[in-house]
Length: 415
Image 1 (cartoon, rainbow, N blue to C red):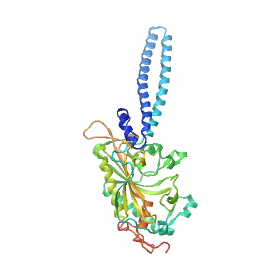
Image 2 (image 1 turned 45 degrees about the vertical axis):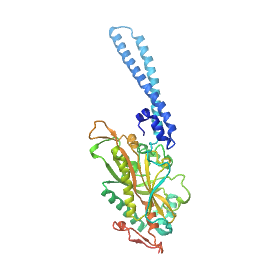
Image 3 (image 1 turned 120 degrees about the vertical axis):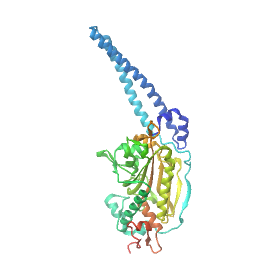
Image 4 (image 1 turned 60 degrees about the vertical axis):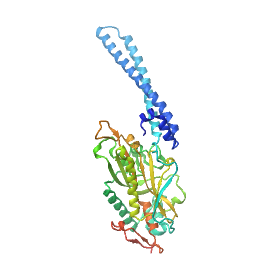
């Protein structure tokens, strides 16, 4: 959520920033509602002062034995006016909160207007079999479709060991960078999704358990962000860095075409997610740090990739700046998103009321939050299979994964 004080004091700055992502038209509605709210507050205070004065007058009249009928009638009139103003204030505040919730984060000045490729790493351009051909019966989409519907899969045999090795490798790598491993809950209340900016924004992609008023998360970012909701963190404890491993669930509404083949875009997948709470002045550097960790993991896994700075028009509502790492997939002969990392500044922290006490200041400030994918397991398995394939259909796997339990190689499918 944007700071209402900033919107009020520098509306043109906010408009100009949001205009880069086509959302400047929402600012005026916020300003109108905020102005009406600030008019109603002193009016209500005046009513309350009148009520207090009338109450004293009635009490004094009764003590003196005087007739208090007129004073009681006057107080009833004041109370009625107060109820009207109070009801309007409640409506205005609800509308204001809704209007603020519609505002996305202001993009960073250096977030590009168009997707911008920053660099390519590794051997790209290779073609070959796709992951379903290479995995054979180790990826069973047909049975999963009978059990659960389309876009689900059974992983079997060596691919299970590969997944577990990927997760272990990612968590060990992140621990080496100061991240605390976490297995978070994946069913959350609405406030957790609102706090991270997924509501109201991506309702069509979220599974809801209506009977319990809970939602299945599409990323561990959601429960990790709420880990310190409502807290005041000691500034000396920042940064706080967490590595969350969880299953993730996405409806993938509207996705079609080539993405529906195999496990590239499924409704359930596992992921290791990085999440950081930092002081505002450290956020930009932390964003680059997350990107460097993602690249370190991709390089260790010998996956060719490119880094893309994402256009402001494609940012999620909470992101001020975002990088994607796109892996080269020989089976598709194209780059596909494998990881992303976003700087969300204080947008999520305001919604979740996460503040910290700077060591040199008495005033509390909101932390800044950042998130990044360490390993999206399904897509990483695709990249490993397709880039590690040999001419005979066998697949060689990277040494760092073999060291934590992955097989040395996968034989040709169903051999």
